[in-house]
Amino acid sequence: MIKNLSDLQKTAKHAYFARRLTDTLIALQVGTSPKAVTTAFNEHCKSLVAKPHTVRKWLIGQSQPRSETLLLLANWLKVDPKELIAKPSHTNVESNKSTFEFDFNDHEVISKYLAMTFKQKVAVRLVIDAIADKNN
Image (cartoon, rainbow, N blue to C red; front, side, top):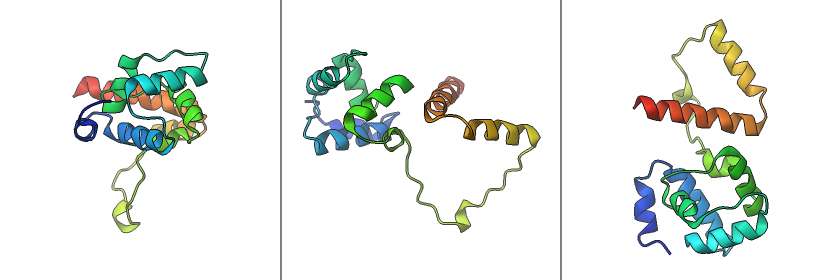
């Protein structure tokens, strides 16, 4: 068990993922200790072995799994992978108006992105996050 798990998650880089993971684990009565999660995940998923140190990072929000692992994790937890990583948007229509103007290249990139599979979109998101983190 991680002491002060919710406190660690509040300021974490991947706080939303960590909270969703923790809530799902509690709902499924798996427990939130890195060892319990690792054991249960590894029993379910034979193609990939998670380590307690890695799972601890997920639980405290220090990191989140790569796309392949995320898909296996979501499958094991019986949730949509988007539920683990995508924050729900609670905006009203009026405040959602954008002042951005997109040129043809932007439209082309967005169209290609929208045509991707979920797994490809997750990979793109991870690349964008890595680039954004490097620039900050």
